[in-house]
Image 1 (cartoon, rainbow, N blue to C red):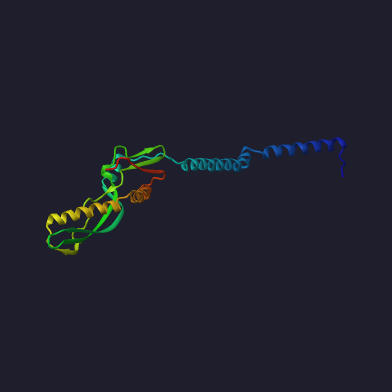
Image 2 (image 1 turned 45 degrees about the vertical axis):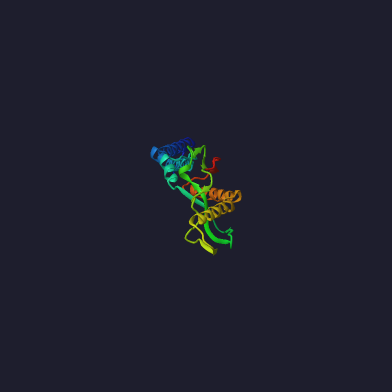
Amino acid sequence: MEKKTEKETRKQNQNSLQSYKERSSKGFTPRLLAILLAPLVIIAIVGGVIWYLNSSNSVGLSTDDHIDITPTQIQEIQNIGQWEFLSINDEELIDTVSRGFFSDSELVRIYYGTVRLGIDLRQAGPQWLHVEGDSIIATLPPITLLERNFIDEARTRSFFEKGTWTDGDREQLYKRAYRKMLKRCFTPENIKIAEENARQQFMQFLRSMGYKKIRVGFATDRK
């Protein structure tokens, strides 16, 4: 077997090292670089999409607290007209005596009536329903009698009748019964109850229309 000299051996080692370097440099091609970088690019794209979606969602969740009410809506509410908030049933016993030379005449009658308290939205003032900032404000007309003829004359009857009485006499008893019934039912206490009922019901009504911050008051001029 032929022995290699030290010089030949060193040259062979150098050639092997050079060949390894060439093979290594040839293996790290642009195609291989693209394959290695592809996952990083995909991760960056996915991250960007997620960030965009999150930023879009945050914009979508923002709220607009601006509220408004149109003249048409106000007119539709005003067209409701009378709105009852308290009803009081009452009865009054009214009597009268007429002195005579030989005998006295006496008439006793019972009157029934229902006094209804509420508001008439057709009597509302200008700007009675308007928006201030993020609140809607309603200034309702004063509580009033919704029906002036509240005595039910069909139910009125004579409890006791002696002697002769004219239609004028019965009319005087009717007027006395009317005044007593009005005084008994149309009181500051009942007006306050009606106002509280009106406030609660009107606030509930506006909430059903979508409004959240609501203030309800009453005009001071009572009719």
